[in-house]
Length: 162
Image (tube, rainbow, N blue to C red; front, side, top):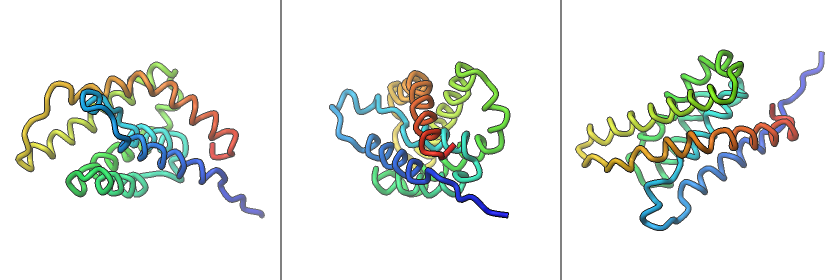
């Protein structure tokens, strides 16, 4: 019996690299608060479509890397991305059969949960509460998810990752 090696691992790494780059890309100060949660959305996509390859450990490693490159409290993003990955891996069979608009709403709820956990960490460490614009990236994630999912899905099928 021949075993086939999973293909397209380079695409997963490249998409995470692009998400990291978009997360630290310099932006004008007023637009900084509107930066979407790129790494969280990419982790959710790959956990949803390839849960046997990308899971909680990969999300934890991505979170630690995001903590290091963004200069936040070490473990903050690792905690939130690990929880997101766990929820998506546990529910991926149910979520994948939903139409795109329902998947988008589910991802939006996940992004809200990620922001709530981050808010909890900020409160636990005694940092000041953020402004109302703190919630704007979740709405941008809601808008960008269908296009990002379609783009990564098409690239993943062409590369053999899906």
